[in-house]
Image 1 (spheres, rainbow, N blue to C red):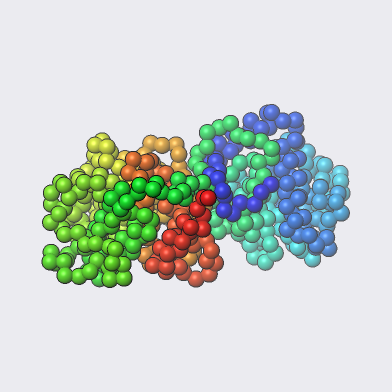
Image 2 (spheres, rainbow, N blue to C red):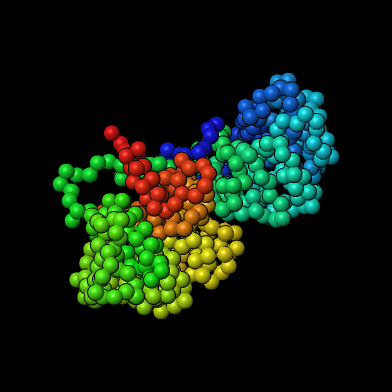
Length: 506
């Protein structure tokens, strides 16, 4: 068993259907009750670690399926070790799974107190949720189970969920039904589920623990959870022959009047990420270029709009479009889509794209010409691009991210809790493991867009999905040291810059 916080290596994730197939194969390859015995022992071990006070009661609330069976095995083991344990069994069925029925019989024979009513015992120290697990795919399914979840949520006692907090979809990280458990700890068993790591899942599972029960799935993973290894290529010293011309050029187009700061933040981030030269082209501004690009960062340069009127002006540029662009970015998108060798569309560029079928078709045509494009929407922008509601996007973030990439034949970063990185028609969906609420501040998205472009400019031939994954992880990792309050966007850039030194390989 391990505690998962900041994984060093990317880990495979399996949706509910794959998880059920893995479980079925494991059951076929094991003796009866063997898998449930391992799971129950793991639950009991963690329960004792979380509640070491033998004078406090561990209350295990079990449902009618194998999730409840795991809880019953744990109850029997804890009882045998002299711990005070009480079980409430909700919705028991005579035709329930055979292993769960056997676990119940063995717990009763061992003298475990098992009740049908749901009332918390006195001197309660820990609640173990064994109600649903993977059974949350369609929601709790009964008023009795929903009532049990609601009651547990009203109690302040710490809660340990077995496999998944009851009521949480293992696929989407979205609550199914009207009730979902808020756990302080979740012990995921056999294989990791993506719903724990994106959307509401990150908040509902609390601290995440994992036990593979000694088995390695043979199935191809449905997604991967990013670890620090995604930064490996960026933490080594550069070649001795490097110079600014070899580090790539970035152009940030945006910053309409009143929103110059967004473009400047993206430009600063591109510089800090290591781009050799970074240019800003402000929208709706005088061609005389009477202002500095950024008085606080004189390294940033203004690019005359006239230079972009010839094809030579686009050569070798990695372009970020939309940061603070407002409606002024819309007239520029046709040329950007036509000429940019590498194009990242963010913010107002995405909103303009969502309103124009012509621009959307131009975006799809880029891939046919070998020109990669990366979209970085937050959920509302993604909803506009997909012509669905934000609620629908958040209800299945994995599918939404993949739909964006497939629809526009591009790469897509769906931002939010557990940001996702998708590539068109690819099975390699990535979920970020870093980041927290400190990033919920103005300009943090502009920083991500600029940092991503800065990395991309340095490695124009590398896989854009891998580059986006590194940028997203780096962005979140810089915020992980801050536990309270927002991390202002300009400070975030400096944190990301310093992180390179902190994580650099010898």
